[in-house]
Image 1 (cartoon, rainbow, N blue to C red):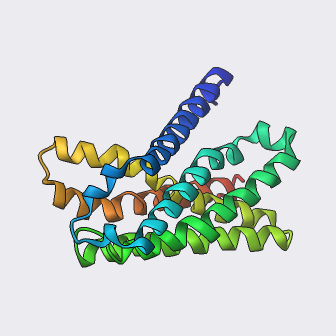
Image 2 (image 1 turned 45 degrees about the vertical axis):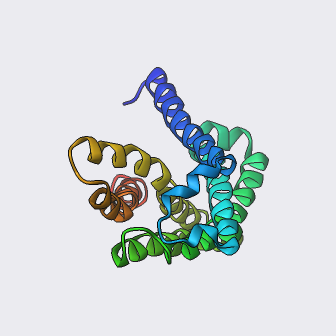
Length: 207
């Protein structure tokens, strides 16, 4: 059984990663040089730049507030705020970040592999979040919680991408190969973890 200090440390570290990466993402909106990572000329297209800003802004909001939704004490003590944060989270993803992410994926560096990897990530992100919203509107809280776990697992792809991409390069993997791997590795393993959590919490015989 986890003790209270361990739980507080875990939640604090978890929040630090989420808020830290969210702020890092927001910093890109003020860095003209960040567009230099695109080598196919798409960064000069206004539509792509708008999508870029929508994706980073919406994703940063979802990541920066989404982690609070899974804190049991916060949720039980501030249910009204929990609902308001939930609406902001859904809007940030469904109306802003995931459609922009899908558009950006069509022009991803790394070829077809990365178009598929980041494209599927955007589709799953959109779909899981919509299902979470539909479930809670129908009053099915258990289904809502399951879909939210899956949705935030994809949201956390922003964190895992920034953790594992540098590690792969340090290990000697070329930047192109690392990027082609991370297009899937930043979010698919997260979903396996999400399903394991769901299995333990909702589907195990002891639950």
